[in-house]
Length: 384
Picture 1 (tube, rainbow, N blue to C red):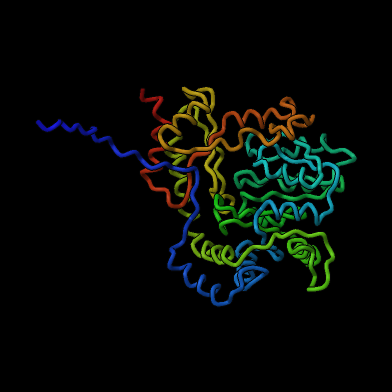
Picture 2: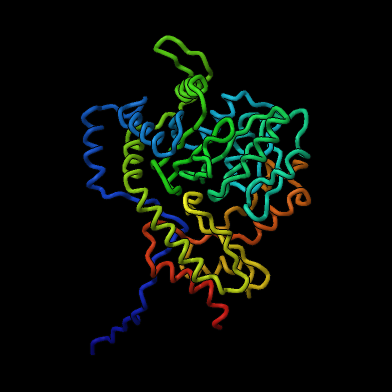
């Protein structure tokens, strides 16, 4: 008698994992002609045609006069610290990606952490002056989640104390205030064009300054300090953006209005869907032009039926890879935790937010059904 063959019961197909973000990918057929141009020219880097075209396009799009493209945002930040000749201590925020503090430490500069404003999550200007010492050379604020810092107050404090200001604008592509681009503030602003950002060149970044002389030195610093074939005037690094990345950036700019509009719509839908969920607080919405919707953070408050970490776990179990940006705080890592400015009692707001925040998925290709999955997990404790 033939053996009985048992088959496993069919299981429902698991829903695909949903990441916190996803880069916008332009149609491949639009990229192919650019690749053909690069193939034919055989110019892959060192300031080729696409590099120069992207710089020109970004000057126009961002409303700035002086911009230098870089291979990534971290390298641009290192060049910014170098070109301003910063030493000693630089005041910065603990509520940021650790690269902000790393750039200082890598450059032989001591990061000094100052608490954040619990409403904007940016560096709190009211706490700045107490942290200034004779060794302070600059302030390095971050436009967190694309929410502009209090640039006027920071600028006034810096001017009073003779300090330089570098803005980490990694989140702030395209952000403006009533006077124009937010990038016009401070001595230098640094952008990231990483794949997680609203505008990407695969990997990449840029540095925005305000005069020809500074720009010329920055361009030397990112190319080993070369002036010409036989003249080297600076101890430079290799920070150049390659041609394929620049070409990809040009395509990103072409589609940017549509991708930003879609992100804005997703932001609006989240706010509507979560408005009546007790214990889930969305950050204050920004006016049009003052947000690029690169992130959608919410705060899990005591009234919610589970902790932030429990909600994070529930989302992960449902295939939703939400992220606890920024937990741990940058100052909590071992290379910084011993510093007096990193003490918890010095940074109560930053610690409070870091223990409550969770960033929900948001990206231009996100579907209504995917967004509904996220919302359903958040609302689920009230349906049990």
